[in-house]
Image (cartoon, rainbow over all chains, first blue to last red; front, side, top):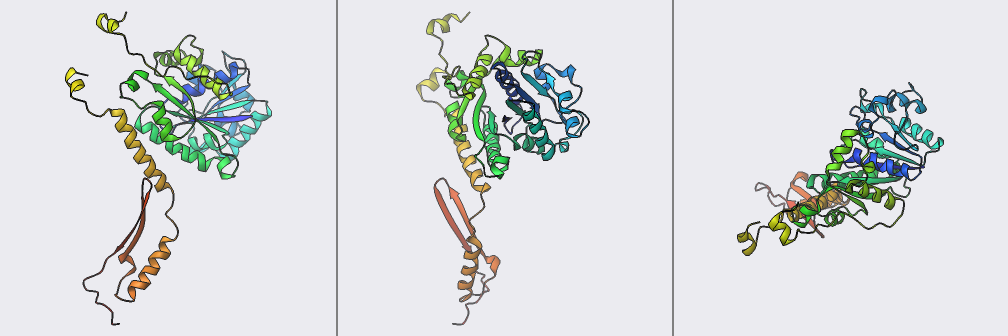
Length: 270
Length: 90
């Protein structure tokens, strides 16, 4: 079993959107996948996955022995091989203990899960630390914007010092950079950091670029992970991310912008 | 973008400014994250011993710090001599 943390430091950059789409993508490939919300007190993964009305027990109930893991796991309505473990909405982050989280991870492994995707809360407090503690791989979600890049750099430092792999001196957590809310047009116009700039600053291999898109809001409105919105650039970009994660070679898409032709500019595009 | 700015050159693109600022701040935060080399306290003490041979000086009058700028390391030694501190008799 591989544990993948989706993290960023900064809030609002697309961690939960990515966790939902990425976990769904792995499950669509036939892998038995669990996606776990570590944002105790401010859960939102359930809404993005569209299972908010089916939450009975949560992660903290399991940690505190009030429910079994099998009772708290919610089966996804789109993909059979996907399960969601929601965070608690009422308890606080102190409920997450190292021993507790480790026990749940072991149990998921015993249940035959191939992948666990940990949706990290923003910040560098307990919830975020617990989400990355047992990670084998990390997807660092970054917007092309100064505060997000700086926070990503910070969280990379934490991955390299506070994960179990780092503490025990094992092979380091495998890091992937995911640039989200990308506008090729604004990059072309010199108004936005390019993915190459960000990669150069953070020095982490790029796993994908997700374009800024209306589809993300449509997806969250309906509680459908964005990867299911067939034909949208976001769905295809996330499918590419999953493919690259699984070792397939996919060229980057949605990163170049073609200036409209003179005729289009004169007569407007229809 | 107006015709004038096109003809007479334009201000630096903001993305380039963002990149420059990030390069500086990230480099600095990486340095701050690491502790300063451990020979600094010893260096300070030995300097104090040497200088005390000639002038009266308090330990806090000697400040030793290492700064990093890009690929450059600067060792800064600051010694404050009090006007009242007379040279010791040789």
